[in-house]
Length: 241
Ligand code: SAH
Image (cartoon, rainbow, N blue to C red; front, side, top):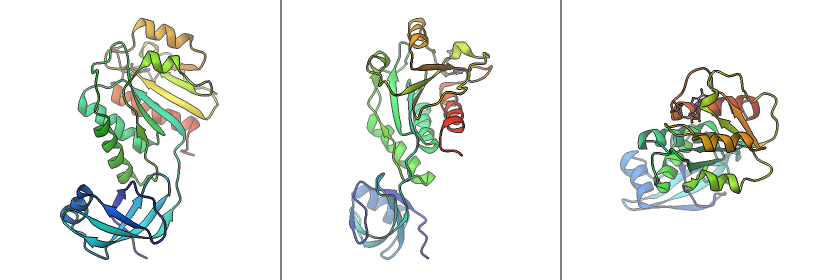
């Protein structure tokens, strides 16, 4: 059986016999960097159709074509979990997006809080990080990265059926956990390096959908907190068992 060593995310529909055109970057990666030639195998996924085995039909410097052969895995959707976080320094923000994609977030939502350090994000760059992480971790799903939204707006328009795991550094050392919370639509909220403002904390503690939790006795950096919170959530309510 042919086993593909390379996994590639494509936007094209996937199905038996499909031809998938490659753009310049993909051709450069497959043929320039990975040195594939016609006949070599590549695993493809597009976030909807599962994973498919394909082979190189045409290889060029600026393009090429893959031919799809057969499905190797069905689509596996992650749980309906959004990771909401306040963007921090570039490398750490990239890390959060990469880890969220690996750990099984359905959506990645940068939010601007009162003490958020940056007012702007490069959504396209963050999305590219999520693509790389999905390619590497064997996922068949690609979490979308939203544009930066204001936390107040997110809370004003909060959907009735979604719960919020509010990671509140003011609870460090307290025993607040997810406990017996049920429900299958969730979001995690992680604050910036400066933490949440008093007003934000008041609002979140009063919100009926919010479950304030502690992530242990020490204050974690936001990127660590994101990974820790996703671990706890996945273990309690997600697809880890
Ligand atoms: N500067 C703040 C800490 C911010 S840590 C202070 O010194 O208080 C960044 C984010 O990580 C926080 O907003 C929170 O969402 C999360 N976090 C870090 N440690 C935590 C803990 N022990 N419990 C709950 N959330 C935590």
